[in-house]
Length: 109
Image 1 (cartoon, rainbow, N blue to C red):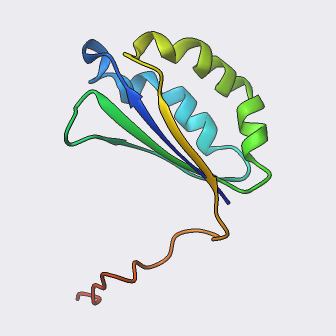
Image 2: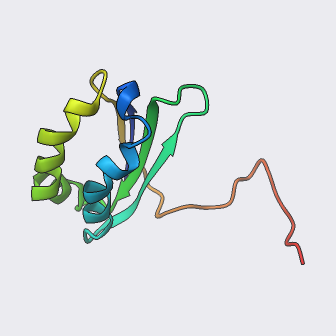
């Protein structure tokens, strides 16, 4: 599985609208075969920074980068950013999420 984490420094005047500005790209990517997850989070320390957590089957990331919606996002979204996004891209042997070994919560109810 390929896991990608990207930090997007959004211009302050566009920070509130970022979820809507990136919505088309987000929805199209989530619909791709081989996409495991594509989730945005907003930094608690910097309200202009959004973090994208995404994962793909090993053979699906190349198709993602070649997709029309990816090319459109690369062309259009930079105008809303304060700087170049920073990325971590890695291949892991896991097949998805698993329980956190250091913290356990008993079922409630």
